[in-house]
Structure formats: structure tokens, C-alpha cells
Length: 272
Ligand SMILES: [Zn+2]
Image (cartoon, rainbow, N blue to C red; front, side):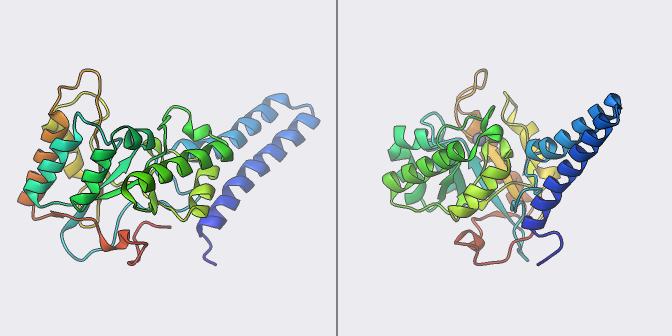
């Protein structure tokens, strides 16, 4: 087993937290409460920080790049489907001859099943992004809730499109150890990203594209979003994607869903 395998990283993270907790107890027993407090805080941080860091690999594998010898990138689109953007987004992808992966929210999929089916029928992928997408609290979810969120979304995708998901992206990329464990049990590969551009707030397409391009290289996983957003004019999401695909093409890049995405056929970079 590799020293820094996902399992060993998980053990090391808990061990660090436990050692610091033990030191806190010894300091408290010796009457040194200030030191005890600092050790206890450090022990808590050893567990909490890896949970709160996006795409953190302290508790398991997260794929943030794919292996390719060509100028290819993987565009991933989160938080749909949504009637405000999905039809336009599909049209833009079609115009550019690009393929993408949609990390869909289960309840949106059930609400607009025709959009979920359109994603699949146009040759894109639809994968799991939880059922409710409770981004503010999912990082603290216990195993039962994590399992329910993942299973309900899998079932929404299966029920509407007949497709079985095999990839998972945690809301805002934040996942605790239970999320990794449940995703592994469900046979879902955790997918992160290596290039994104702050499009979760009202934005100008050009600014988002500029930020994304700074981190684009062969094998990059690009994250953009769909869905409505207060203060964001209708149509901006599709314009952002259009500007992104145009710039990628000018730089010689092609947007693909890599073959690895079919149950890990190709070894991934950034996987461990
Ligand atoms: Zn999301």
C-alpha cells in the first residue's frame, strides 16, 4: 500500500487530531489549561480544516485532472438542470461541437425531467451532485444523511434517464470523511476541478473566462454553474459558456468528456 494512499491519509488525519487531543488532556491534567486549550483547538482544526478545504484529499481520492496527451479539457456544469439556462447551454455546446458533464441536483432533475433527458440525448453526461444541494450544511452531514442525498440523486437520474451515475461532486467541493466513505461504497468517483472563475455570484462572462483560463492546461477539469441567481441577468450563464468555448478553441483546446469517465477506463492524474 502506498504511504500516502487515501486510506493512510485518512488515518494520518485522525491520528494528528488524536495526538493533539491527547496532548490537550495531559496538559489539562498537569493544570496547564492555556496549553490544553491550544492543543485542543489544534486537534479540532486538524479534522475541521481538511473538511472545509475544497477538493481536499485528506479523507479520500478526489479527481481534479485527467490524463491526456492532447489539448483537451473537461467542462463540468453544476447545479442544473434549470429551465432558465439548460436549453441555451445545450444549444451553445452543440454550436461548438463540445461535450460536457452536468453535475445535476436530484430535485431539479425530478422537477424538469425533460431537461435531464435532453442532456443525455445530446450526448452529454449527467452525474450526481446530491438531491437537495444544501451547500451550507452538507460538510457536517452524518452518514445517514449523506447516503440519502447520494442515493436519492442516483435514483432521480436513473428514474428520468435510465442512466446509472458513477461520479459524484460534493456541493461546493466540500466533503467530510463520511462523504468519501459513502461515495466509495456507492461506487461513485469523487470529482473536483482545477479551473473555475467565481461564477457563483453575479458576474461578467469575460471576467469568469479570464479567471478560468489562468488554470487551463491539457487535462484540466473546468467548473461552471447553471441555475438562477439573484442579480444575474437571464442568458449570462450561456454567454459565459459561449465565451469560454470560443477562447478555448482560439487556444487550441477541445472540450471533451474524457474516456476515463466511463468507469475509470484510463488512469487519472490527481487521483490520489
Ligand atoms: Zn453545486
